[in-house]
Image 1 (cartoon, rainbow, N blue to C red):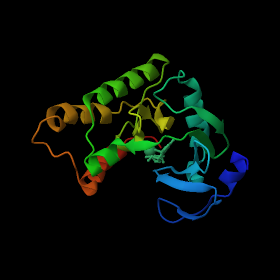
Image 2 (cartoon, rainbow, N blue to C red; image 1 turned 90 degrees about the horizontal axis):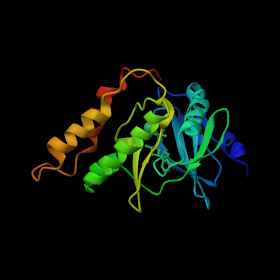
Image 3 (cartoon, rainbow, N blue to C red; image 1 turned 180 degrees about the horizontal axis):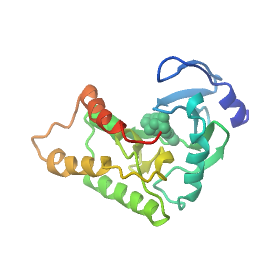
Image 4 (cartoon, helix red, strand yellow; image 1 turned 180 degrees about the vertical axis):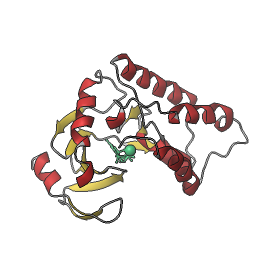
Length: 200
Ligand SMILES: Nc1ncnc2c1ncn2[C@@H]1O[C@H](COP(=O)(O)OP(=O)(O)O)[C@@H](O)[C@H]1O
Ligand SMILES: [Mg+2]
């Protein structure tokens, strides 16, 4: 089945801020819900289909344009296809930093350096990485750092989130007394502070 048909099989119903997912093709497996989209793995393929909420559909083209602008590297998933309300990118087998903290999986210092290298790479091609937070960074099962959700890399507003997270890592997390497992509610609270101020 074509990716476009798979994207069309995703039926959502508007209900509050996050639409409700009504139905989708059985070859799709829901792997994530964000602030703007539902993300599925396509069965038997190593790709992820990101289908945007109806009022966020315009972000698909913006995110695709940014993936095209990023230099090919191991820090970002490759873009396979884009449509009017969806994009298809590499499926990443791993866990977000959020899941690492929630489950107490240790995040090594080298990962922080790799994230900075990935951000530097984006800046070199004129992008302004924004919305860099715990749910948009994945460490794959073979230890590679991958940044996803690049839609806001052309926003002009400076986003302090990553600087603050980095500070928290070096000033707190690396210390032996710092808890390595952090309750989900607390992590969501930290994220909520930064949500204001972004353009979409
Ligand atoms: N390529 C991918 N491989 C594996 N999981 C993914 C992939 N893309 C997104 N996800 C999961 O789906 C969640 C939402 O995706 P994201 O692109 O951040 O959507 P949003 O723009 O709505 O925030 C992510 O936090 C992550 O858990
Ligand atoms: Mg996201």
